[in-house]
Structures are given as C-alpha cells and as structure tokens.
Amino acid sequence: MHVKSMKSIDVREGSLLTLELKRAYYVPVRDPRVSDLITWYFVTLQKAIDIIWDNIRWELRKPKLVRRNGVLQTLMGLKLHNPIIPKGEKFNRMLRDELMKDNPYAAHWVDAIIRKAYSTIKSWRKRYLKGKARKAKPRIKRRFAKCKITLMKIDYKEKSIRITMKPHEYLEITWRGTWFEKRVEGWLVGEVVLKDDRIIIPFKNYKIVKVMDIIGWDSNELELTGYTPRTGFIHLDLRPLQSMKIVYEKKKRIAQSKGKRELYEKYVRREKNRVKDFINKLASQLPRTFPNTLHIFEDLEKDDMIDKGRVGKGRRKRNARTPWKTIHKMIGGKAPIVRVPTRNTSKTCSRCRFKVRDLREQEFECPRCGFKMNRQKNAAVNIRRRYLEGGGRKKRRNRMRGFPHRDELEETMKVDLWAGVTQSGQRLMTWWGDDRKPHMKPMKPRASRRPHIKQYKPP
Image 1 (cartoon, rainbow, N blue to C red):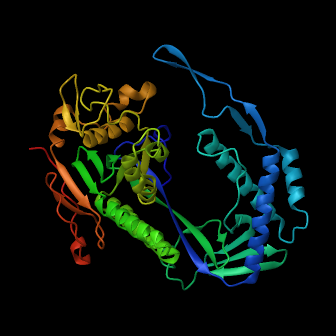
Image 2 (image 1 turned 90 degrees about the horizontal axis):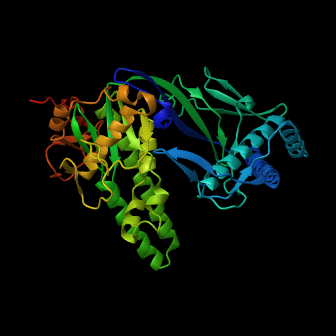
Image 3 (image 1 turned 120 degrees about the vertical axis):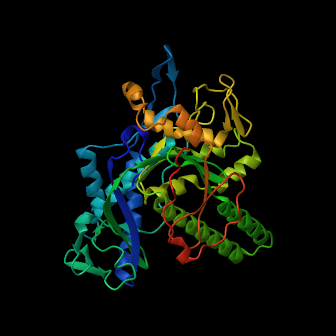
C-alpha cells in the first residue's frame, strides 16, 4: 500500500481497506535491438530534460502569512527563487517535434520520454525547494527504457507481452515457465522497464483488509517500539540489523585501507543483500504476527538526523545505519500503513499532554502530573493517539474513537511483548517479559506454525 499522510486516510477499527500489492520480476533477454533502443532512449531523454531546463522561469518566492496562536507570522522557504516548469500545448508540441527528428522508433516512445522527463524535473524541483538538491540540471546516469502501456500488448492467457519497437517490428517476451509464474497468477501487468540484459515486469494486485487493530510505532536505533491497547507495548528487535552494519563497516574500512577495491565492492554487495534480506523478512513476518492491523509510523526526515549542525558525530553515524524509511516502505507493501508528523511525539506527556522543553534522559518525566515512562514507549502512545485524533473540527469526536480509557491505558502500559525476526518461519519470534532480551536464534520451519499470540486481557 502506498504510504499516505495522516489527512488522506481515516480508518476505524472494523473498516475495510483496499491494499495495493506490487511485485516486480525480471526475464533475461539477449537481443541487440534492446541495447540499441536503450541507447537512443538514454540520449533522447537527456535531450528532453535539457530543453525543459532551458525554458524554466525563475521567480521570487513570496512569503507566506500564517496565524499561529492568534499571532500572524511570516514563513519563508529555504529557497528564494521558485522554478516554474514550462507547460502548455504550444511548448509540448515544440518539444515533441524536436524529439521526433530522426526518430527511428514508434512515436509512442517519444511520448514516454516526454512524460519521464517531466517526472524527473518535477522530482528535482520538489527536492530543490526543500533544500535537498542544488540548482543544477538533472543528469541521467543509468541506462534504461520505460515502456508505455500503449506500446504493449499483454496476453494473460499465454502469459506473454508484445512490445512495439518500430512500426511493424515487435519484441516478444513471456513469463510462462519462470519460477515466479504461480506467484503472479491473476495479477495485472504494469509498464515494463527495459535493461541491456533483462526486462523488468511489474505486477499489481489488490487485497481487501479489515482493520481490527491500530498500532503506533516509534522508530529507534535498536528497536521499533509499538503500542496498542489490545496487546500493550511491542518491542521489535533491530539489533541484528545494527550488527550487520557495524561488522561490514569494519570490513570495508580494512579493505579500503589496503587498497583492495574488488574486496571492498564485494563487502558492499554482501552488506546490501543481507540488510535487504533482513528487512524483507521483517516486512513479511510482522503482518503475519499482527494480521488485519493498521500500522502508524512517523514521517521521518533522515537528512535532519544526520545534519552536522544539529547532531553530533557519534549520533549521526548511528542514525545513518538504520534505514527507517526503507523499513516503513517494505512493511507498507504487505500491510496498510499511515505516516504522521514527528513533532513533539517524545516530548508530550501521554497522560496530560503537557509538552516539556528539553528531553535528554531515556525516561520521560512530566513536570505537571509526575507521570514517568520510557521515552520510546511514551512516543509510541502519542503516535497512535495523533492518528486517532486527527485534527480540525473532528478532533473532539475522533478522540473517543478506538482510544482506551485511562484505567485501561495504565494497565496495558505494564505489558511488554518482545519480538524478533527469524531466519526461517512465517512469524516473528515473540516472548512476554521485561527488558531482558534473550539471544536471537534461527527458528526451525516447523516451529513457526504456532497460533497467534494471545491478546492481553486486564485482570
């Protein structure tokens, strides 16, 4: 499911959600025509970006006036100049005519290039206005060619795709007999991507999910801390991921000091594959352990966490190790997720909602009501509450929706469920207890067929 903002989704317990599932597999191909097409596509795409860039207008950004707490304030963006991307029928016709010169392929390939060029420029503009990109023209570095759906003829019965290369010249590919054939039975085919030695075929399907629980997750360095009144606090161990990063950082540093480039690249690939494997298992096992659940995550900006002016060197290095956004994205492909703003989730008291100014200790202590709790647990409760309450005029009505009574809240706050990713098996390894975490061992496949964890019931 696509990651959505807090305002774009409103789900109650018992609601039905349409979960969009996506998968992508590749089929090897050895055809010199594909390489020739990619070469022309690569050059023409950069030419289209150059033309659009040369016609961008730069305007001064006007300050935005907002009213906060009854006071009128002026907001200024990070960039003084605002790039205006050219558009309109006249410019599009000029751009298409320029790219159609000496075009040996079907005209729809030019339309696909124009769409990709605009997408690249818009993505750069968005990052530029946020201060994440320089005022420099985007450059295409990887060789590929993205095919429009109008250039494809899909035969689901024969499990084949016919791609139009030139007028009356086609490329036939099939996924019949491949290892993923049964995995995508009944799925829809999207726009394929051509590479020099393979063709990537995306598949899409939809699944109806009945939301029976909502978990708020606080993303930390060594664990994901979740909270739901049905279970209590959930601690998902990320220490194996940190161990991989630390071990391979040392190996890469040694290989780099000895000047062994091939060995260094080998460790880079191995680290990437093992981290990806861990995150894939986490994303698969979490929805199976907590089925029919809506997961609430923070909308983290990692650039702020690794900024030299804000964060110290040690903390900056530790923050760079954990790929939180990748974890959230992979879980979003298996279960419905929502992102909420991160502001003051750790500094707000989950009992009386008082906001402390400075929070440096691991334990949160409210100066107003004296409430004490681990700061990660406190943030998990606030993240879940922030989604349930929403905002605006519906805030008071939504406050009663799905959030527990104070007595029930206090009781479930005493319960801790620990969970860890297993190397094999369908679900997470779980155990009840306190902060004592046992050593994680691979679970045997037969041990994974355990019933779902029992829901906590207050005595």
